[in-house]
Length: 202
Image (cartoon, rainbow, N blue to C red; front, side, top):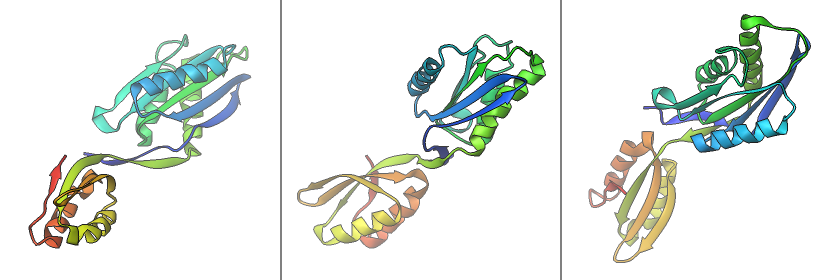
């Protein structure tokens, strides 16, 4: 399972002219399908006089990603689908894209439309700033006070986010740990505590 994947770090756009038609690709982060649809609607609203606002989204990553696409009035399969294929081939997750077209009076034909929509989006992605999405697993760790500082340092080595701390008879830490670091961190916790503490699912 993929636990780390690139996502858009911020909105990014690219514009070009093809046979007098103006094509504007806008790419945005979209962590959920609802956010993707909201972003697509907001981008389309910026260009109310455009001939078409075609779109695609790819939320998540790999075979379980949620996807969607629309030709927005262009001939079937000439806009949304090519855009979706570009997104799927990019390795990005949690991404939505709109390619806005202002028709310039010259018909491009089906092949020309596929190249225009897919190509404009690809050029936007070529310059897209990205960040890393990390899928995390929630864990709980109960430790003696004597090991508190050492445990915090150990967790930091595994990129764990400490979300809560409870100080009672012992210290209980609620953590969010990168899924690909779980086993190694669990082993390190056992070693640090001589088997007295264990990293458990929260």
